[in-house]
Image (tube, rainbow, N blue to C red):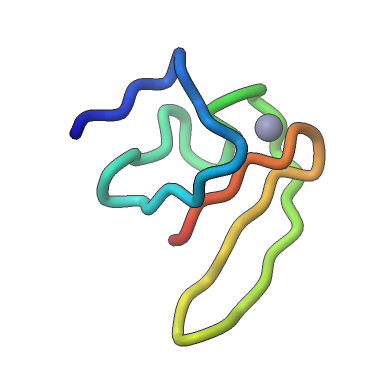
Length: 57
Ligand SMILES: [Zn+2]
């Protein structure tokens, strides 16, 4: 399955490999550059503080 930047699902946790940053360090959905981050299970989860999009880095 392919993902595209125009159809971001906020319920989903994307991974960097399936959806690389369109612009490094910015949210693919809203362009915000502030994130809340969580670390768990050896993964780093980045959540946009504006729209809530999640990506495992
Ligand atoms: Zn966002």
